[in-house]
Image (cartoon, rainbow, N blue to C red; front, top):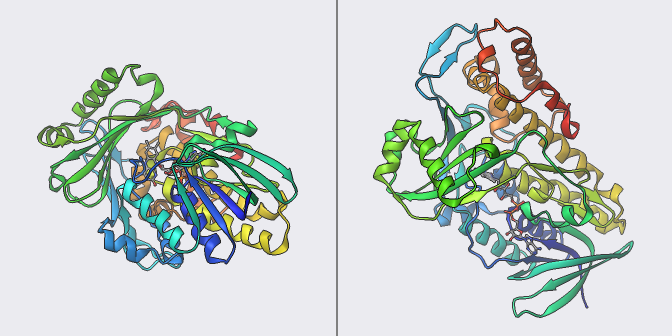
Length: 444
Ligand SMILES: Cc1cc2nc3c(=O)[nH]c(=O)nc-3n(C[C@H](O)[C@H](O)[C@H](O)COP(=O)(O)OP(=O)(O)OC[C@H]3O[C@@H](n4cnc5c(N)ncnc54)[C@H](O)[C@@H]3O)c2cc1C
Protein backbone atom coordinates (compact mmCIF):
# COMPACT_ATOMS: atom_id res chain seq x y z
CA UNK A 1 0.00 0.00 0.00
CA UNK A 2 1.37 3.42 -0.92
CA UNK A 3 2.07 5.62 2.14
CA UNK A 4 2.10 9.42 2.26
CA UNK A 5 1.98 12.09 4.98
CA UNK A 6 -1.31 13.72 3.98
CA UNK A 7 -4.20 12.59 1.80
CA UNK A 8 -6.60 15.25 0.54
CA UNK A 9 -10.11 14.35 -0.65
CA UNK A 10 -11.09 16.85 -3.39
CA UNK A 11 -9.16 19.06 -5.80
CA UNK A 12 -11.27 22.24 -5.53
CA UNK A 13 -9.71 25.50 -4.27
CA UNK A 14 -9.49 24.22 -0.67
CA UNK A 15 -7.87 20.88 -1.55
CA UNK A 16 -5.44 22.26 -4.14
CA UNK A 17 -4.33 25.17 -1.92
CA UNK A 18 -3.78 22.70 0.92
CA UNK A 19 -1.70 20.48 -1.39
CA UNK A 20 0.45 23.48 -2.41
CA UNK A 21 1.17 24.42 1.22
CA UNK A 22 1.94 20.82 2.28
CA UNK A 23 4.16 20.10 -0.75
CA UNK A 24 6.02 23.38 -0.24
CA UNK A 25 6.86 22.34 3.33
CA UNK A 26 8.61 19.22 2.03
CA UNK A 27 5.98 16.78 3.34
CA UNK A 28 4.36 14.33 0.94
CA UNK A 29 0.71 14.51 -0.06
CA UNK A 30 -1.79 13.08 -2.51
CA UNK A 31 -4.94 14.75 -3.82
CA UNK A 32 -7.82 12.59 -5.08
CA UNK A 33 -10.34 14.41 -7.25
CA UNK A 34 -13.31 12.47 -8.50
CA UNK A 35 -14.09 14.67 -11.52
CA UNK A 36 -12.10 15.17 -14.69
CA UNK A 37 -10.99 18.81 -14.88
CA UNK A 38 -11.98 21.26 -16.23
CA UNK A 39 -15.50 20.86 -14.88
CA UNK A 40 -18.06 23.65 -14.35
CA UNK A 41 -18.53 24.89 -10.77
CA UNK A 42 -20.49 27.63 -9.09
CA UNK A 43 -18.64 30.32 -7.08
CA UNK A 44 -17.04 32.58 -9.66
CA UNK A 45 -16.47 35.91 -7.95
CA UNK A 46 -13.66 36.16 -5.40
CA UNK A 47 -12.98 38.54 -2.52
CA UNK A 48 -9.54 40.12 -1.94
CA UNK A 49 -8.57 37.96 1.06
CA UNK A 50 -8.00 35.25 -1.57
CA UNK A 51 -5.00 37.28 -2.77
CA UNK A 52 -3.04 36.39 0.39
CA UNK A 53 -3.08 32.76 -0.67
CA UNK A 54 -2.24 33.58 -4.31
CA UNK A 55 0.73 35.58 -3.04
CA UNK A 56 1.85 32.89 -0.62
CA UNK A 57 1.72 30.25 -3.34
CA UNK A 58 3.15 32.40 -6.14
CA UNK A 59 -0.04 31.79 -8.11
CA UNK A 60 -0.60 35.37 -9.35
CA UNK A 61 1.46 34.91 -12.54
CA UNK A 62 -0.85 32.03 -13.55
CA UNK A 63 -3.98 34.10 -12.84
CA UNK A 64 -2.55 36.90 -14.96
CA UNK A 65 -1.43 34.62 -17.78
CA UNK A 66 -4.91 33.07 -17.93
CA UNK A 67 -6.39 36.55 -18.27
CA UNK A 68 -9.02 36.19 -15.54
CA UNK A 69 -11.02 39.40 -15.29
CA UNK A 70 -9.96 41.79 -12.54
CA UNK A 71 -12.57 42.58 -9.91
CA UNK A 72 -12.14 46.03 -8.37
CA UNK A 73 -15.34 46.23 -6.37
CA UNK A 74 -18.97 45.29 -5.89
CA UNK A 75 -22.33 46.98 -6.48
CA UNK A 76 -25.85 46.46 -5.17
CA UNK A 77 -28.93 47.74 -6.94
CA UNK A 78 -32.45 48.15 -5.63
CA UNK A 79 -35.78 47.95 -7.42
CA UNK A 80 -37.47 51.28 -8.07
CA UNK A 81 -40.09 50.93 -5.33
CA UNK A 82 -37.44 50.31 -2.66
CA UNK A 83 -36.33 53.10 -0.40
CA UNK A 84 -32.84 53.72 0.87
CA UNK A 85 -32.22 55.62 4.07
CA UNK A 86 -29.41 57.94 5.03
CA UNK A 87 -27.75 58.38 8.36
CA UNK A 88 -30.70 59.76 10.34
CA UNK A 89 -33.14 57.51 8.49
CA UNK A 90 -34.51 60.43 6.47
CA UNK A 91 -35.63 58.81 3.27
CA UNK A 92 -33.97 59.16 -0.08
CA UNK A 93 -34.91 57.10 -3.08
CA UNK A 94 -33.39 55.23 -5.94
CA UNK A 95 -29.81 55.10 -4.75
CA UNK A 96 -27.69 52.06 -5.59
CA UNK A 97 -24.48 51.45 -3.68
CA UNK A 98 -21.05 50.38 -4.77
CA UNK A 99 -17.71 50.02 -3.09
CA UNK A 100 -14.12 49.87 -4.33
CA UNK A 101 -11.77 47.40 -2.67
CA UNK A 102 -8.89 49.87 -2.58
CA UNK A 103 -10.81 52.25 -0.31
CA UNK A 104 -9.35 50.25 2.59
CA UNK A 105 -5.75 49.00 2.91
CA UNK A 106 -5.39 45.31 3.71
CA UNK A 107 -2.38 43.81 5.45
CA UNK A 108 -0.15 41.89 2.99
CA UNK A 109 -2.39 42.66 0.01
CA UNK A 110 -0.93 45.03 -2.54
CA UNK A 111 -3.31 44.73 -5.50
CA UNK A 112 -6.37 46.99 -5.85
CA UNK A 113 -8.30 44.07 -7.30
CA UNK A 114 -9.08 40.40 -6.98
CA UNK A 115 -10.68 38.28 -9.76
CA UNK A 116 -13.80 36.85 -11.32
CA UNK A 117 -13.02 33.35 -12.60
CA UNK A 118 -14.29 30.56 -14.79
CA UNK A 119 -14.13 27.93 -12.06
CA UNK A 120 -13.47 25.16 -14.56
CA UNK A 121 -10.18 26.78 -15.54
CA UNK A 122 -9.32 28.27 -12.14
CA UNK A 123 -9.66 24.94 -10.32
CA UNK A 124 -7.70 23.14 -13.03
CA UNK A 125 -4.84 25.67 -12.87
CA UNK A 126 -4.63 25.50 -9.07
CA UNK A 127 -4.60 21.69 -9.10
CA UNK A 128 -1.85 21.72 -11.74
CA UNK A 129 0.03 24.27 -9.63
CA UNK A 130 -0.13 21.85 -6.68
CA UNK A 131 1.35 19.11 -8.87
CA UNK A 132 4.15 21.45 -9.99
CA UNK A 133 4.90 22.20 -6.34
CA UNK A 134 5.35 18.48 -5.64
CA UNK A 135 1.93 17.07 -4.72
CA UNK A 136 0.71 13.86 -6.36
CA UNK A 137 -2.66 14.49 -7.93
CA UNK A 138 -5.18 12.04 -9.37
CA UNK A 139 -8.33 12.98 -11.28
CA UNK A 140 -11.32 10.70 -11.80
CA UNK A 141 -10.27 9.13 -8.48
CA UNK A 142 -13.22 8.72 -6.15
CA UNK A 143 -12.57 8.23 -2.44
CA UNK A 144 -15.25 5.87 -1.17
CA UNK A 145 -14.05 4.60 2.20
CA UNK A 146 -11.72 5.55 5.05
CA UNK A 147 -10.52 3.62 8.11
CA UNK A 148 -8.84 5.28 11.08
CA UNK A 149 -6.51 2.40 12.03
CA UNK A 150 -4.39 3.84 14.86
CA UNK A 151 -2.75 7.08 16.05
CA UNK A 152 -0.66 7.57 12.92
CA UNK A 153 -2.40 5.51 10.32
CA UNK A 154 -5.43 6.22 8.16
CA UNK A 155 -6.38 3.97 5.24
CA UNK A 156 -8.16 5.52 2.29
CA UNK A 157 -9.90 3.45 -0.41
CA UNK A 158 -10.13 4.99 -3.84
CA UNK A 159 -11.82 3.95 -7.08
CA UNK A 160 -9.24 5.00 -9.66
CA UNK A 161 -9.76 6.18 -13.23
CA UNK A 162 -9.34 2.66 -14.63
CA UNK A 163 -12.08 1.36 -12.31
CA UNK A 164 -9.63 -0.46 -10.02
CA UNK A 165 -9.95 -0.02 -6.25
CA UNK A 166 -6.73 0.92 -4.47
CA UNK A 167 -5.79 1.54 -0.85
CA UNK A 168 -3.49 4.34 0.34
CA UNK A 169 -2.17 5.09 3.84
CA UNK A 170 -1.52 8.48 5.48
CA UNK A 171 -0.93 10.17 8.82
CA UNK A 172 -3.45 12.98 8.35
CA UNK A 173 -6.58 13.00 6.22
CA UNK A 174 -7.91 16.33 4.90
CA UNK A 175 -11.52 16.43 3.77
CA UNK A 176 -11.84 19.09 1.05
CA UNK A 177 -14.74 17.40 -0.70
CA UNK A 178 -16.85 20.57 -0.86
CA UNK A 179 -20.61 20.36 -0.44
CA UNK A 180 -20.34 16.57 -0.86
CA UNK A 181 -19.17 16.75 2.80
CA UNK A 182 -17.66 13.26 2.63
CA UNK A 183 -16.51 12.99 6.26
CA UNK A 184 -19.31 15.17 7.65
CA UNK A 185 -21.83 12.65 6.33
CA UNK A 186 -19.79 9.65 7.39
CA UNK A 187 -19.26 10.85 10.95
CA UNK A 188 -22.79 12.31 11.18
CA UNK A 189 -21.45 15.66 12.39
CA UNK A 190 -23.28 17.74 9.76
CA UNK A 191 -26.07 20.03 10.95
CA UNK A 192 -28.44 21.52 8.42
CA UNK A 193 -28.83 25.26 8.91
CA UNK A 194 -32.16 25.84 10.68
CA UNK A 195 -32.38 29.44 9.41
CA UNK A 196 -31.28 29.54 5.79
CA UNK A 197 -32.85 27.20 3.30
CA UNK A 198 -31.82 29.03 0.16
CA UNK A 199 -31.55 27.51 -3.32
CA UNK A 200 -30.04 28.93 -6.48
CA UNK A 201 -30.54 28.57 -10.23
CA UNK A 202 -27.86 29.96 -12.54
CA UNK A 203 -26.46 29.97 -16.05
CA UNK A 204 -24.07 31.80 -18.42
CA UNK A 205 -25.00 34.40 -21.07
CA UNK A 206 -22.96 35.50 -24.03
CA UNK A 207 -23.19 39.09 -25.30
CA UNK A 208 -24.79 40.47 -22.13
CA UNK A 209 -24.06 44.20 -22.29
CA UNK A 210 -22.42 44.94 -18.95
CA UNK A 211 -21.74 48.51 -20.09
CA UNK A 212 -25.42 49.20 -19.47
CA UNK A 213 -24.41 49.20 -15.78
CA UNK A 214 -22.28 51.84 -14.03
CA UNK A 215 -19.36 49.56 -13.07
CA UNK A 216 -19.24 46.88 -15.76
CA UNK A 217 -16.33 44.96 -14.21
CA UNK A 218 -17.89 44.72 -10.70
CA UNK A 219 -20.03 41.92 -9.38
CA UNK A 220 -23.62 43.16 -9.24
CA UNK A 221 -26.11 41.99 -6.66
CA UNK A 222 -29.60 42.99 -7.77
CA UNK A 223 -32.18 43.02 -4.99
CA UNK A 224 -35.60 41.78 -6.06
CA UNK A 225 -38.94 42.35 -4.36
CA UNK A 226 -39.35 38.70 -3.33
CA UNK A 227 -38.54 37.90 0.29
CA UNK A 228 -34.91 36.89 0.92
CA UNK A 229 -34.14 36.80 -2.82
CA UNK A 230 -31.52 38.39 -5.09
CA UNK A 231 -29.77 37.92 -8.42
CA UNK A 232 -26.05 37.96 -9.22
CA UNK A 233 -24.32 39.27 -12.32
CA UNK A 234 -20.68 38.19 -12.55
CA UNK A 235 -18.33 38.97 -15.46
CA UNK A 236 -16.53 35.77 -16.54
CA UNK A 237 -14.82 36.88 -19.76
CA UNK A 238 -15.27 39.92 -22.02
CA UNK A 239 -18.00 37.92 -23.75
CA UNK A 240 -19.53 35.80 -20.96
CA UNK A 241 -21.55 36.83 -17.90
CA UNK A 242 -22.81 34.51 -15.18
CA UNK A 243 -26.30 35.27 -13.87
CA UNK A 244 -27.97 33.49 -10.98
CA UNK A 245 -31.04 33.74 -8.80
CA UNK A 246 -31.01 32.94 -5.08
CA UNK A 247 -34.30 32.48 -3.26
CA UNK A 248 -35.82 30.48 -0.45
CA UNK A 249 -36.48 26.83 -1.13
CA UNK A 250 -40.20 27.26 -0.53
CA UNK A 251 -40.33 29.70 -3.48
CA UNK A 252 -38.70 27.22 -5.87
CA UNK A 253 -40.95 25.09 -8.10
CA UNK A 254 -40.13 21.37 -8.13
CA UNK A 255 -39.72 20.88 -11.85
CA UNK A 256 -36.84 21.94 -14.09
CA UNK A 257 -39.21 23.96 -16.31
CA UNK A 258 -40.82 25.56 -13.26
CA UNK A 259 -37.45 26.68 -11.89
CA UNK A 260 -36.39 28.20 -15.20
CA UNK A 261 -39.73 30.02 -15.43
CA UNK A 262 -39.17 31.29 -11.87
CA UNK A 263 -35.73 32.62 -12.90
CA UNK A 264 -37.30 34.63 -15.73
CA UNK A 265 -40.21 35.83 -13.59
CA UNK A 266 -37.74 37.17 -11.02
CA UNK A 267 -35.66 38.81 -13.77
CA UNK A 268 -38.83 40.54 -14.95
CA UNK A 269 -39.00 42.26 -11.56
CA UNK A 270 -35.80 44.11 -12.56
CA UNK A 271 -36.60 45.49 -16.03
CA UNK A 272 -33.12 46.96 -16.62
CA UNK A 273 -31.55 43.54 -16.01
CA UNK A 274 -34.20 41.72 -18.02
CA UNK A 275 -33.68 44.07 -21.00
CA UNK A 276 -29.99 43.09 -21.21
CA UNK A 277 -30.69 39.39 -20.61
CA UNK A 278 -33.21 39.35 -23.46
CA UNK A 279 -30.62 40.77 -25.88
CA UNK A 280 -28.00 38.21 -24.78
CA UNK A 281 -27.76 34.50 -25.59
CA UNK A 282 -27.97 31.83 -22.91
CA UNK A 283 -25.04 29.46 -23.53
CA UNK A 284 -25.38 26.93 -20.70
CA UNK A 285 -28.25 24.96 -19.26
CA UNK A 286 -29.60 26.21 -15.97
CA UNK A 287 -27.95 24.55 -12.95
CA UNK A 288 -29.67 24.26 -9.59
CA UNK A 289 -27.89 24.32 -6.22
CA UNK A 290 -30.16 23.22 -3.40
CA UNK A 291 -30.17 23.13 0.42
CA UNK A 292 -26.73 24.49 0.75
CA UNK A 293 -26.36 26.00 4.22
CA UNK A 294 -24.96 23.77 6.97
CA UNK A 295 -22.28 23.52 9.65
CA UNK A 296 -20.25 20.72 11.23
CA UNK A 297 -20.23 20.27 14.99
CA UNK A 298 -16.44 19.69 14.77
CA UNK A 299 -13.89 20.78 12.15
CA UNK A 300 -11.05 18.56 13.38
CA UNK A 301 -10.61 15.15 14.99
CA UNK A 302 -7.59 12.92 15.64
CA UNK A 303 -5.86 12.48 12.22
CA UNK A 304 -8.57 14.50 10.46
CA UNK A 305 -9.07 18.11 9.30
CA UNK A 306 -12.10 19.47 7.40
CA UNK A 307 -11.57 22.55 5.19
CA UNK A 308 -13.53 24.70 2.72
CA UNK A 309 -17.14 23.77 2.05
CA UNK A 310 -16.50 20.35 3.59
CA UNK A 311 -16.23 22.22 6.91
CA UNK A 312 -19.00 24.79 6.63
CA UNK A 313 -21.15 26.53 4.06
CA UNK A 314 -22.69 29.96 4.52
CA UNK A 315 -24.99 31.75 2.09
CA UNK A 316 -23.00 33.14 -0.88
CA UNK A 317 -24.51 36.67 -0.88
CA UNK A 318 -21.10 38.28 -0.24
CA UNK A 319 -18.98 35.90 -2.41
CA UNK A 320 -17.15 34.51 0.61
CA UNK A 321 -16.85 30.79 -0.33
CA UNK A 322 -13.62 30.53 -2.34
CA UNK A 323 -11.83 32.89 0.02
CA UNK A 324 -12.91 30.74 3.00
CA UNK A 325 -11.78 27.63 1.11
CA UNK A 326 -8.34 29.10 0.33
CA UNK A 327 -7.78 30.65 3.73
CA UNK A 328 -8.97 27.55 5.58
CA UNK A 329 -6.20 25.71 3.72
CA UNK A 330 -3.76 28.45 4.73
CA UNK A 331 -4.65 28.24 8.43
CA UNK A 332 -5.02 24.45 8.61
CA UNK A 333 -1.81 23.72 6.71
CA UNK A 334 0.20 25.59 9.38
CA UNK A 335 -1.19 23.24 12.08
CA UNK A 336 -0.73 20.17 9.88
CA UNK A 337 2.91 20.98 9.10
CA UNK A 338 3.61 21.45 12.84
CA UNK A 339 1.80 18.16 13.63
CA UNK A 340 3.94 16.31 11.08
CA UNK A 341 7.11 17.77 12.59
CA UNK A 342 6.12 16.69 16.10
CA UNK A 343 4.50 13.37 15.10
CA UNK A 344 1.39 14.35 17.03
CA UNK A 345 -1.78 13.96 15.00
CA UNK A 346 -4.27 14.36 17.82
CA UNK A 347 -7.19 16.72 17.53
CA UNK A 348 -5.48 19.25 19.83
CA UNK A 349 -2.75 19.76 17.19
CA UNK A 350 -5.34 21.40 14.92
CA UNK A 351 -6.94 23.64 17.56
CA UNK A 352 -5.53 26.93 16.20
CA UNK A 353 -7.07 26.23 12.85
CA UNK A 354 -10.42 25.24 14.29
CA UNK A 355 -10.80 28.33 16.47
CA UNK A 356 -9.62 30.70 13.70
CA UNK A 357 -11.97 29.30 11.10
CA UNK A 358 -14.93 29.16 13.45
CA UNK A 359 -14.35 32.79 14.43
CA UNK A 360 -14.17 33.94 10.81
CA UNK A 361 -17.11 31.93 9.55
CA UNK A 362 -19.27 32.89 12.53
CA UNK A 363 -18.54 36.54 11.72
CA UNK A 364 -19.58 35.99 8.10
CA UNK A 365 -22.67 34.17 9.27
CA UNK A 366 -23.76 36.98 11.60
CA UNK A 367 -23.12 39.59 8.89
CA UNK A 368 -25.20 37.59 6.39
CA UNK A 369 -27.97 37.15 8.92
CA UNK A 370 -28.15 40.91 9.49
CA UNK A 371 -28.47 41.32 5.78
CA UNK A 372 -31.41 38.92 5.50
CA UNK A 373 -33.14 40.27 8.59
CA UNK A 374 -33.04 43.89 7.44
CA UNK A 375 -31.27 44.24 4.12
CA UNK A 376 -31.84 47.98 3.93
CA UNK A 377 -29.42 48.23 6.86
CA UNK A 378 -26.61 46.98 4.65
CA UNK A 379 -26.95 49.85 2.16
CA UNK A 380 -27.39 52.26 5.07
CA UNK A 381 -24.12 51.12 6.63
CA UNK A 382 -22.27 51.32 3.30
CA UNK A 383 -23.57 54.88 2.90
CA UNK A 384 -22.61 55.95 6.43
CA UNK A 385 -18.99 57.21 6.54
CA UNK A 386 -18.54 56.00 10.13
CA UNK A 387 -19.17 52.37 9.10
CA UNK A 388 -18.23 52.20 5.42
CA UNK A 389 -14.72 50.85 5.98
CA UNK A 390 -15.94 48.37 8.60
CA UNK A 391 -18.38 46.96 6.04
CA UNK A 392 -15.61 46.94 3.46
CA UNK A 393 -13.36 44.95 5.81
CA UNK A 394 -15.97 42.17 5.69
CA UNK A 395 -16.45 42.46 1.94
CA UNK A 396 -12.68 42.11 1.51
CA UNK A 397 -12.85 38.86 3.49
CA UNK A 398 -10.93 40.06 6.57
CA UNK A 399 -13.13 38.32 9.13
CA UNK A 400 -10.76 36.12 11.14
CA UNK A 401 -9.08 38.56 13.55
CA UNK A 402 -11.92 39.82 15.77
CA UNK A 403 -14.21 37.86 18.08
CA UNK A 404 -17.06 40.36 18.13
CA UNK A 405 -16.48 43.15 15.57
CA UNK A 406 -17.90 46.64 16.30
CA UNK A 407 -19.76 46.59 13.02
CA UNK A 408 -21.79 43.54 14.02
CA UNK A 409 -22.52 45.00 17.44
CA UNK A 410 -23.71 48.26 15.85
CA UNK A 411 -25.89 46.43 13.32
CA UNK A 412 -27.41 44.20 15.98
CA UNK A 413 -28.21 47.21 18.14
CA UNK A 414 -30.14 48.90 15.34
CA UNK A 415 -31.96 45.73 14.34
CA UNK A 416 -33.08 45.20 17.92
CA UNK A 417 -34.37 48.79 18.07
CA UNK A 418 -36.24 48.32 14.80
CA UNK A 419 -37.75 45.02 15.93
CA UNK A 420 -38.85 46.42 19.26
CA UNK A 421 -40.40 49.59 17.81
CA UNK A 422 -43.30 49.04 15.39
CA UNK A 423 -43.27 52.78 14.60
CA UNK A 424 -39.65 52.75 13.43
CA UNK A 425 -39.43 53.82 9.74
CA UNK A 426 -37.64 50.54 8.94
CA UNK A 427 -39.99 48.23 10.88
CA UNK A 428 -42.09 47.34 7.83
CA UNK A 429 -38.93 46.26 6.02
CA UNK A 430 -37.88 43.58 8.50
CA UNK A 431 -37.14 40.19 6.97
CA UNK A 432 -38.57 36.92 8.14
CA UNK A 433 -35.59 35.78 10.25
CA UNK A 434 -35.91 36.29 14.00
CA UNK A 435 -33.41 37.47 16.59
CA UNK A 436 -33.37 33.97 18.09
CA UNK A 437 -31.62 32.80 14.96
CA UNK A 438 -28.44 34.62 16.11
CA UNK A 439 -27.71 31.79 18.52
CA UNK A 440 -27.29 28.94 16.06
CA UNK A 441 -23.87 27.31 15.64
CA UNK A 442 -22.38 29.21 18.54
CA UNK A 443 -22.52 32.61 16.82
CA UNK A 444 -22.36 35.30 19.50
C1 LIG B 1 -25.32 29.40 -5.43
C2 LIG B 1 -23.90 29.57 -5.01
C3 LIG B 1 -23.19 30.71 -5.40
C4 LIG B 1 -21.86 30.87 -4.99
N1 LIG B 1 -21.19 32.02 -5.36
C5 LIG B 1 -19.93 32.21 -4.91
C6 LIG B 1 -19.18 33.35 -5.32
O1 LIG B 1 -19.63 34.20 -6.09
N2 LIG B 1 -17.92 33.49 -4.82
C7 LIG B 1 -17.36 32.57 -3.98
O2 LIG B 1 -16.22 32.76 -3.53
N3 LIG B 1 -18.03 31.46 -3.63
C8 LIG B 1 -19.29 31.26 -4.07
N4 LIG B 1 -19.94 30.10 -3.74
C9 LIG B 1 -19.25 29.14 -2.86
C10 LIG B 1 -18.18 28.33 -3.60
O3 LIG B 1 -18.77 27.63 -4.66
C11 LIG B 1 -17.55 27.34 -2.63
O4 LIG B 1 -17.40 27.93 -1.35
C12 LIG B 1 -16.17 26.84 -3.10
O5 LIG B 1 -16.29 26.19 -4.33
C13 LIG B 1 -15.58 25.89 -2.04
O6 LIG B 1 -14.39 25.27 -2.50
P1 LIG B 1 -14.00 23.83 -1.96
O7 LIG B 1 -12.67 23.54 -2.52
O8 LIG B 1 -14.23 23.74 -0.51
O9 LIG B 1 -15.10 22.85 -2.61
P2 LIG B 1 -15.37 22.51 -4.18
O10 LIG B 1 -14.96 23.68 -5.00
O11 LIG B 1 -16.76 22.09 -4.26
O12 LIG B 1 -14.38 21.32 -4.45
C14 LIG B 1 -14.60 20.05 -3.88
C15 LIG B 1 -14.06 18.99 -4.83
O13 LIG B 1 -14.08 17.73 -4.16
C16 LIG B 1 -14.39 16.72 -5.12
N5 LIG B 1 -14.89 15.56 -4.38
C17 LIG B 1 -16.04 15.47 -3.66
N6 LIG B 1 -16.16 14.26 -3.11
C18 LIG B 1 -15.08 13.54 -3.51
C19 LIG B 1 -14.65 12.20 -3.27
N7 LIG B 1 -15.36 11.36 -2.52
N8 LIG B 1 -13.48 11.80 -3.83
C20 LIG B 1 -12.74 12.64 -4.58
N9 LIG B 1 -13.11 13.91 -4.85
C21 LIG B 1 -14.25 14.37 -4.31
C22 LIG B 1 -15.44 17.39 -5.99
O14 LIG B 1 -15.54 16.77 -7.26
C23 LIG B 1 -14.92 18.82 -6.06
O15 LIG B 1 -14.13 19.05 -7.23
C24 LIG B 1 -21.24 29.89 -4.18
C25 LIG B 1 -21.94 28.73 -3.83
C26 LIG B 1 -23.25 28.57 -4.23
C27 LIG B 1 -23.98 27.32 -3.83
